[in-house]
Image 1: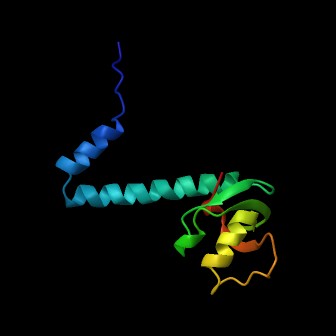
Image 2: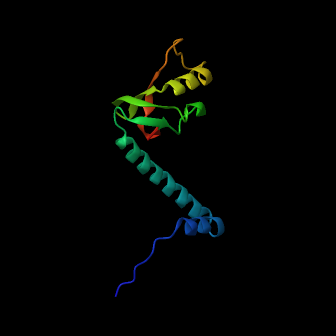
Image 3: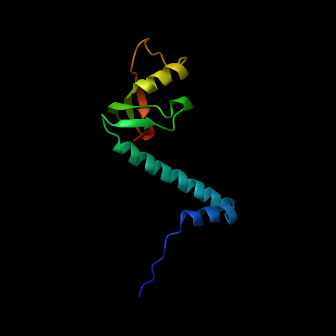
Length: 120
C-alpha cells in the first residue's frame, strides 16, 4: 500500500517563511517565485488574442494600470490596445504630459503594450 503525500498548503508555506526560513531559504524561495512568475506571464501572454477585451496591469507609470480596452493587433510579445472611452478620458487627464490624445477623440490606441500585462 502506498502512502500519498499531500502538498503543503499556502498556510504551511507562509508559516515556514515567517517562522523558520533562514537567508538561504529566502533566497531560494525568491528565485523560485520569480521563475514561477515568468511561467505565468508567458502563459498569460500566449492566451491574449486580437479582439479580446483586456485590463492593463503591472505597467509603469502606475496610472496606466486598470485601463481597459480591446486588443487590435499583436506583434511578437506586444499588443496595440484600443482603449475604451472611459479609459481614454482617464489617460487624457493623467497622461497629458506623456500621451497626446486628439481633442474630441473618444478612443485611443496604445501601441507596444507587453502581452503579459494584458489581463482578461
